[in-house]
Image 1 (cartoon, rainbow, N blue to C red):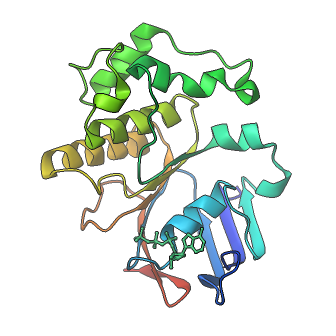
Image 2: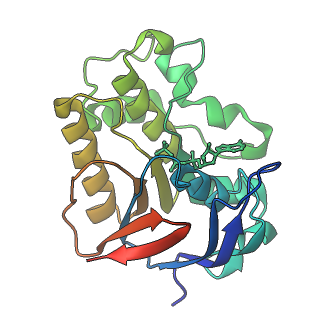
Length: 223
Ligand SMILES: Nc1ncnc2c1ncn2[C@@H]1O[C@H](COP(=O)(O)OP(=O)(O)OP(=O)(O)O)[C@@H](O)[C@H]1O
């Protein structure tokens, strides 16, 4: 079976920049695995995630999702297959519910059925946000709560592959451990494939955890 994601000979230079961020990267991600991506600040971890979900285009090389080049997949289909949660959550004016259901208001997602309030409440509870009302203004939540809402919002589109950019960077130890637990559950129980950028020493449980280091413009697997 083809890997869920394959990166072939990928190079990337930011527009206007003198030198590439990385060159000739290759990586195959098996379905169900959890890839931890580490590297010093500025080595290009966020850039790599943005290339995988096609928020940016590589200078050269190919990215395949389930054997198909992502450039050949219609953007709405790719967005629901590959979920991306940015490092800084982007909530808008409006309630928790409005923010969670935002993707369902996009023309591109026309035809997708928005989840009912009961499902949203159940999910809030799974994300340790039991006390949160769906009517609560999203912008008045803490960064950690907004980070979890951003992850929920991405999951509502039911992606098979999740790209998480430092999901615990703004969190205290307790909130971070909640998010790690959620990530493990998504991987081991819901069989999601995860690529997580992290600076933390956290090592999730699960059979297929792999650690990669982005350094000197190349990606190497760590023991
Ligand atoms: N839009 C842009 N245009 C030009 N250069 C950029 C742009 N965005 C990021 N960079 C540069 O690209 C490099 C890689 O940035 P990136 O955010 O991918 O790194 P990172 O490894 O995720 O860093 P961090 O761990 O600090 O989040 C950095 O040197 C950054 O300054």
